[in-house]
Amino acid sequence: MSKKYVIEDFNHFGGIHCETSAVQKIFLYNNLPITEEMLFGLSGGIGFIYWYVKQMPAPMVGGRGGGRNFIENAAKRAGATINVRRTTSSKKGYDWLIEKLSNNDPTVVYADMAYLPYMGVPEDAHFGQHVFVIYGVDEEKDIVYISDRGKRGVKTTIEQLKNARGSKYPPWPPQHATFDFKLPKQLKITKQVIKEALLQCIDTMVNPPMRNIGLEGIKKWASLIVKWPEMFPGENLWEALYQGFIYIETGGTGGSSMRPMYSRFLGEIDSILKVEGMNSVIESFDKSAHIWSEIASLYLPDEYPILKEVREILLKSNTLFEEQETNALQKMLDLNKKIENNKKEIFRDLKHAPSFLPKVQSKILQLYEAEKEAFYKLQEFTKKLR
Image (cartoon, rainbow, N blue to C red; front, side, top):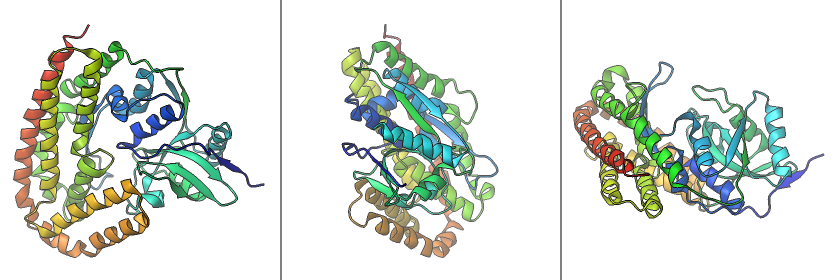
């Protein structure tokens, strides 16, 4: 017998970053007011990774810090604990979801965005660590109610959700991950956990465990980008530039590889810490944020009109996703089709486009200096904390 498991009083939508917005919604639903920026900073905040393995068509350039325990760190430092259940069984994963919804418990899950129609992404854009909140399932109508980064709720079918949660695509399949929260009765963000989060962020950037992470990773990125045409020929070079813009500006980063989000976190904790010198730190990260956006624009530069048009399409598509106005999905799909129809012209231009990569390299080296200065200032600031 089909049943309905919908949390009728759930009304938390929108967000900047998928992970922090999902956690924030659980806190807010349980009357624990906290900003997404605070959760982001407590998680470990910003970082850098240049990631490439052979099964990938092109490298990933990421600006989030906090490592694999990003969500768990955010919750722990805000006074909560999280247990993540994983399984390869679609039935078990679905049963866990229904169990939680039956208890009026909105549920955070991982899923592969390529299997979520409302995302409006290409069919091969697999990423199994997309995070969102499910607040209802109506089995009779075959509707799953989802709160993602959009300002309005979105829906999938039950089968679409099962496929998305059960994706086996590497490198991070979702494994029907289901998050169980144990929340505090009231919030208390201490100076000690803030300092711990700041030190984690600094350590990851300044003392990275490998050369493709942190400040060293930015230098590696700069050294390799002029070699991309040989390393990633043809369509793969297009993937590197196209996806690279998304990683920096529109893929749930809030723009500028999450640096503005981190600056706002620093502004928020300034009133808690009350230690002189934070304004200078924030100014340095704002400078870094500006350079990040310049790099993203240089990936799809003005001097190649077809690439500039792609950049504008990606920004427009992201706005459509976040606003979720009427017919948003169809408009996003139409924009995707426009890019697809221009592929021949794009690939023609990319035969000459490598000539702009030295400009990108120069800007990345500027970024390295700006980030080094920002993290040095943050490191000096933390020394004042008791």
